[in-house]
Image 1 (cartoon, rainbow, N blue to C red):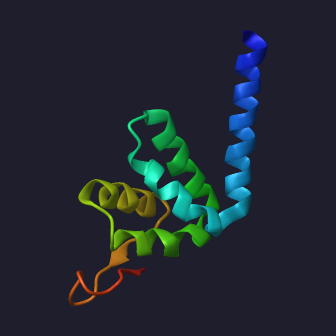
Image 2: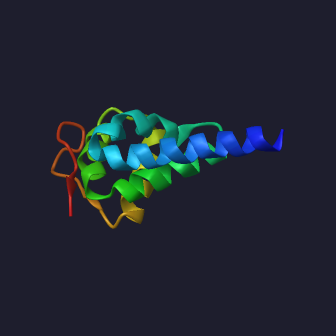
Length: 100
């Protein structure tokens, strides 16, 4: 069983690395994982987005407009950890957040 566990770990690591290499195009698929019931998945999604870096910012900011409160909180936390602070324009419901 130990070899199987090692294989699963290898597959996870390769998937993790592949998502980072894909960059911004993988972000829309990762965003829903930020609210996963599994802590390990939420943490991995957060770390992948942080490692993607700047290419993840725009898709994350765009996702804020349609996200529920729980997902908004997680997205804002990821953006904050990446060093970005959304700046809302006059009416935050009708316009995309601007990033500093």
